[in-house]
Amino acid sequence: TKKHKVTVVGSGNWGSTIAKIVAENTKANPDIFEEDVQMWVYEEEVTLPKDSKHFDAAADGPQKLTAVINKYHENVKYLPNIALPANIVANPSVVDAVKGSTILVFNLPHQFIGRISKQLEGHILPFARGISCIKGVNVTSSEISLFSEWIGEGLGIYCGALSGANIANEIAQEKWSETTIAYDPPAIDSRAPSPSSSQINLVITPADGEHKDVRGRVSKTKLKALPTDYPPLDHALFKTLFHRPYFHVRMVDDVAGVSLGGALKNIVALAAGFVDGRGWGDNAKAAIMRVGLLEMVKFGKEFFGHSVHAGTFTEESCGVADLITSCSGGRNFKCAKLAVERGVSVDEVEKTELNGQKLQGTSTAKEVNSFLQTRGVVDEYPLFKAVIDILEGRNTVDDIPDLVARADA
Ligand code: NAD
Ligand code: 13P
Image 1 (cartoon, rainbow, N blue to C red):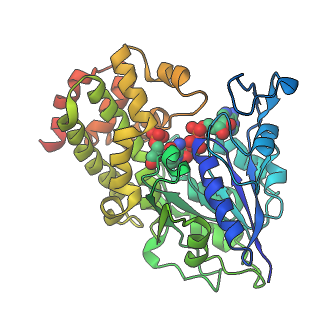
Image 2 (cartoon, rainbow, N blue to C red):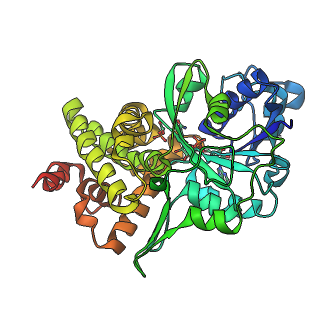
């Protein structure tokens, strides 16, 4: 039998951590996987500070990040002080990195996936399968879709989703956490479990009011079956690829629920940061989480109602657990808190404090708001609306209690 080759598309804080997890498992399972894991790196130059343990006076000055990762097995910029397995191969060419790979793990800030996905068209194995670790939703004018289905549609492959209460730095230090992986491919993978009829992913097009079955369209027109000489790409295989003693995986079918939890909690985490920065304490933060969870579930039911299970939000790591961790120690929370404390914008804090890491909540708040406006239901999501109105200066943090009280009126 052939072995699966794995590529991680992305190498930020979470991308590098997921590459570490995957590379540990490919090494531990040589019958199933090729040992080396390709990791695509958006190339940039880094200068090692003199007090870095990798500082080399002979090679002082700017160096390519890929060269540094491959030499020292550390992503010194986005995941510093974490030893990466030597079987991670940093590659600056995304087209080269995916060559011959049967498993593509997409893990980069959502604002960059469009351009990268375009570059990949025609360069991947037609029978590859994807897992999206991206936390965001894809909004174009009046349409909304999940990144898993949008990637799948663009590349003509099936793509599932991984999301959970997963602050990357903790997992990179091998502190225990859980995650949720949703994988529910159409029956074309004959050895994989067939999809349940409730698991159809949707794009909603308000213009014509029709629900389009994106995944069905892909499967009918382009999706290619995995050759039978590969181990089947099913729940068991993905669990083998991602589960670690410190990273516990639960496999589910609800791709929409898993993806939406990760995307929408980023908006709520900004609100949690706002009230914390204002000095209001844990009760206020808990109130934000309560209202935020209600709006997340409502959004899922309203726009992905054919496939989403409310239980995914309340029972799985990708739902309430991610909301709690993100409102405690996530970057969106921390930057929003600092912004209020310093009296500057969240964008400003992102630039000065994150050393190139990217927030997803600010753009998601804007994208979700524009989608809700075109659907005419923006007032039904008062917390989501309060966040964008605070970010854009139409409201202040002091307005939050009255604004969200409308949710209960
Ligand atoms: P990050 O915040 O570390 O972002 C930096 C990455 O973006 C770097 O790899 C950088 O090279 C890349 N980048 C910068 N400019 C680019 C460009 N023009 N084109 C392409 N790439 C560019 O990224 P991350 O933490 O790995 O996050 C990836 C996804 O994972 C996000 O959707 C995030 O919400 C999600 N996530 C993050 C965490 C976390 O704790 N960091 C945890 C779970 C999920
Ligand atoms: P931040 O992007 O806000 O750091 O959230 C990380 C995360 O998704 C934790 O699960």
